[in-house]
Figure 1 (tube, one colour):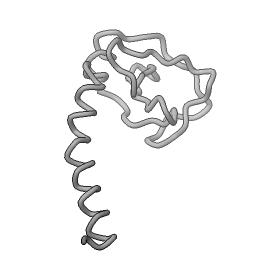
Figure 2: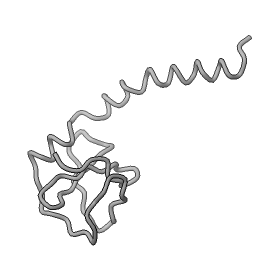
Figure 3: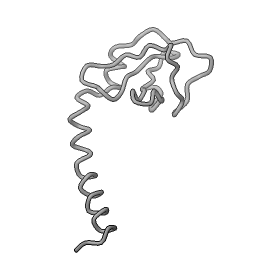
Length: 94
């Protein structure tokens, strides 16, 4: 009989081994490449965006076909990649 810690560790390892496959299936497009190929008008923000910042609801995000997790907008001529679940900035520039 496995101890609770050993069972937890086994479950965690199984979940982690499946995670890359699940992510690859979800994201069929490179969002940064798509954003660079499909620029938009610059968004207006009070302050320059920083990694981890939340994007205000007034900023219209562009969601590439095949991406359910990430979107983008442009600021100062650069693409800004956003996590759709949290609306937080995960990458700035190309």
